[in-house]
Image (cartoon, rainbow, N blue to C red; front, side, top):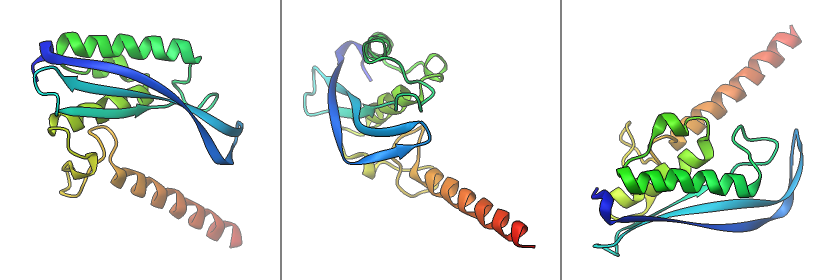
Length: 155
């Protein structure tokens, strides 16, 4: 990636849930999402987009909207200068890291859909830091734990 030719922009949208989403911290009816777009000044067809969205009072990197956007802008400025994502600096902000990595992966794949990106196990991958196979394993572990817990309580 030629760092001098890339531009990162941020747009935000307030999304409205079709149905209220209940969590342990309350009920959500809206969610603010920030979209990071990477474009190449020399190759305008080459783009990447990623979503950064923390849930207030639930996500570890939830901040007031203006602070969240300012910090995200700083990370985007750093990517414009260096051409790479500073993983260590972004580790405490997983929702921002996910969005930037998703945008970067799509950009590096020539602007193709993220579902077409290869995953380490040969299947498809959403982004370098989050692959959907991991979500499935996590779900199965949770389900298995519940099953084992209820079996133990039945004994």
